[in-house]
Amino acid sequence: MKMKKEFEKRDIKSIPSIVDGNKKTIVGFIPYNSRSVNMGFIEIILPSAFSKTLADGADVKALVNHDDSKLLGRVKNGSLRLESREDGLYIECDLPDTSYANDVYTLIKDGYCTTMSFGFIAIQDEIDYEGSQRIRYLKEAKLTEVSFGVTFPAYEGTDSIARSVRGLDLQKLGESLSKEELDNSDFDEIKGAIHILTDLLPKEPEQPVVETESTEAVVENTSAADEQEQLLQRIYDELQTLKG
Image (cartoon, rainbow, N blue to C red; front, side, top):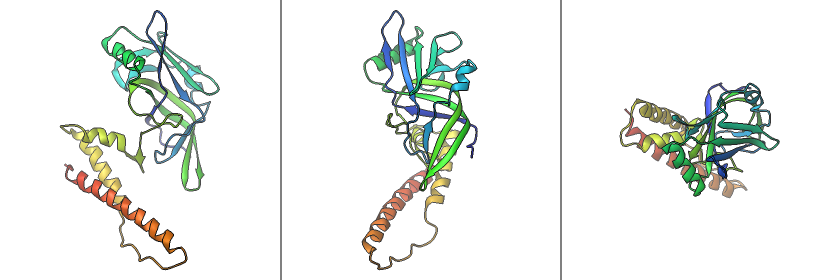
């Protein structure tokens, strides 16, 4: 089973660091065989994932928080170097003498930014299950960019806070809701969230709890479900007020 081939990004707690030398150089790391947090699925990057990208000499870019107007380095001119080892992809970037690059360097050096990110297109993956939990093994991916100066990580060994619920990107939704003025893309994001939440809300009245030997467990599960339903309903009601 293959997921749709589209651009994806992951924020990981790689703890970028500084390399002493004549140039301002930062380094990062993308781990292999490490489980992501639950993003609607668990993702594991296999050691083969970026082999073709590296073999092809693809001109991967290094950016500030996925902003392609703030270029930090690129493979083409040698300022960005990528090396795949047994435990992960090692990244080294010589920074240009620009204000935004100097800002990123300072933030990393002083310990404010402990996260990096990467953007890719999945070429080949494999889906497995652990019970009802879907596990995605990323076997081959076209790496297009790596980013420094990001806030939230997405992998354990990484500590990800990139969250999603059945296709609902909570991080992206949060970014839209935090804006003082919403544009059309923000309203589209909100409308999509409303649609997903509508599907999650129960359509039929709940059946009464049947007294059994495991009644306490049933009541506990019902209570948890009620709390989840109430939370979804509150989010749904608030998003409805913003619906265009």
